[in-house]
Structure formats: C-alpha cells, structure tokens
Image (cartoon, rainbow, N blue to C red; front, top):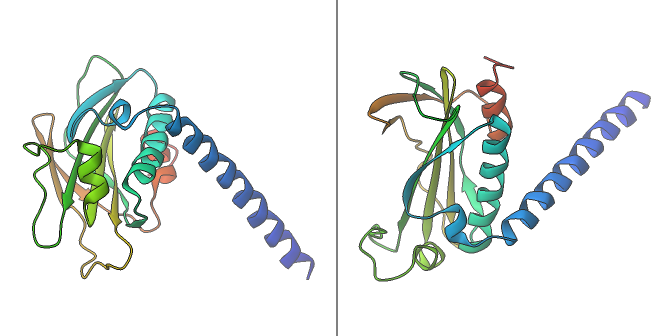
Length: 189
C-alpha cells in the first residue's frame, strides 16, 4: 500500500507540473497572434539556444490548438537521419502545415482566406516542426481532427526534404516533444 501511495504521489506531482507547464504555454500563446507563430504555411526560423526553440515549439503547439479548435488526434516525434544543418544560429527550425476538407486538400498557398481561417475551417490539419541542433535532428508532428471524424490510417511521415537535404524519420516508442528535445541535447540516444 505504501508503494502504491508513493507511485500515486509521483504521478500526481508529474501531472501537476505538466498541467502548470501547459497552462504557461497556453497563456504565452494567447499573448501573440497566429501569424506571430506561423507567418506562412511553410517557414524557417533560427534560435540562439535550444531552450528558446523548446519554448517556441510548446507555445506554437498551444496556439495552433487554440486557433484550430480541433484536438490533436495523433502525432509523434521522430529522430531524423541525415546531414547536419548549417545556419547562422545554433538551432535551425523548419515548419510546414497542411489542411484538408471533406474530399480534398486545401491549397494554403493560393487560398483567398487567411491561414488561420483555413486551419479553423478544415476537417483535418497537420503541423510538423523539424528541429536541428548541432549534429542531430528531430521532427515533431501533430495531426488535428474535427470532432466527429476519425483517421483511418496511422501513417506518419517517413522522409523530409529541407535545407537542401533529405532526412529519414525513425519513430522511437514513446517519443513526444520532451524526449525529442532530450535527444537534441544528447541526454538520450
């Protein structure tokens, strides 16, 4: 019984810390517009520290959820295999998104609607971050789906082409944003 209480206490503490972190990033996201996080459907950014990139990703994920009005239905983090990315800052980040309606994908480039409107009106929306730090790279993907719909496939991206290079994705079991950043910081392999 004592062991059960200790495990419950650890889960409760972790859950509280996670909720506080989520609230912090949700509050941060509310302070900025969608365009502050997502200037277009595909873009690149650089950061001087891995911590800045971590904060940006978490706040951007919160903002995407707030604006889309859809829950994240699935999504994983992957280890990327390919050449190191050379930029003027230590951390390079690429981002792209896709959206689909009932029968077809939504052209986010040539639409006469704003990007956030297209994401909000879509049935499904995909958000992918590619983060490179030193000699490592990861992808963090989220797939958002309107209530009442379900995915019929659990497929993930297998390859990415960015920064003039090709990268293959490997999805370790249990990886999310935290483990992806731990991998980038060489805390785990």
